[in-house]
Length: 299
Image (cartoon, rainbow, N blue to C red; front, top):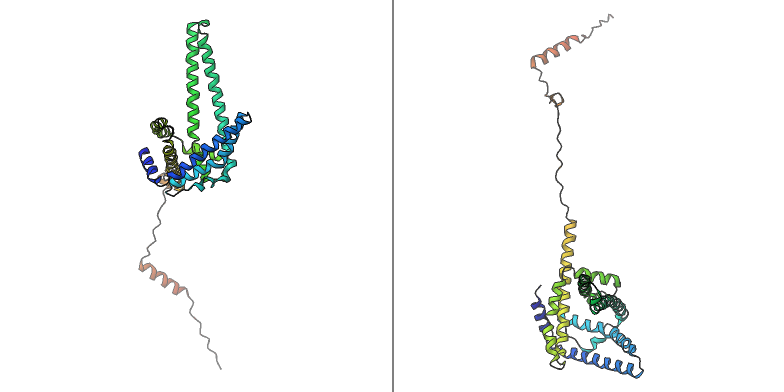
């Protein structure tokens, strides 16, 4: 897949659409600040998280809606931000599942790193070989957990776009479809995301102002990527269905019929009777017939 083409298409489709996206960013920043202020006033930090979750449930799918519209070469407006509030509950369901998976992987990683730090801090208490083995095992395990977490996140990266296009689909099926679509595309997706790292670092030195341009650019590029892999997946499924429906003729069965000479079928030829014999038979038949008797009646 050509990443450059996806990004060029995103920039072209965004022409004239940066204004609504900039307004969306400002709305999120404003709501985030209000949530943090309320949580601080009531001295309950968790409240900020809950309020932002509610805001995300109401507005996040609207952002996906805007990104998909631009990817499909349509114009967007600020009102599109509230276009998919009907998906708020399913958004929360996916959000909770992803949060639980992330928490579990984070816990495993934390325990591994903590254990590794304990081993390093008390390395003098262990035998040199044992200490080396423990540190090596701990580092490998931590790396494996991080790699698995990245793998899971990438395979579930398309759930929001699938939810947007198939709102009636069950959450289980949404995750399954995302996993199927991303099969064999982990490295491809990593390269796509890494292509924005330079812009993200540069945006820091602009006091965050560049993010008003970068955020919609990334969103539409990811929407283009979703459309691309969805089309390829559909083409692959169609080819598989067509191939399954084609009946491949089986090889003809060869039967070896071994017969002896006595078992060979004898071809019956019609018997030819000579003409002379035919006439002789007719004469014999005529002689066998009795001649009619004459009855003379005397009057």
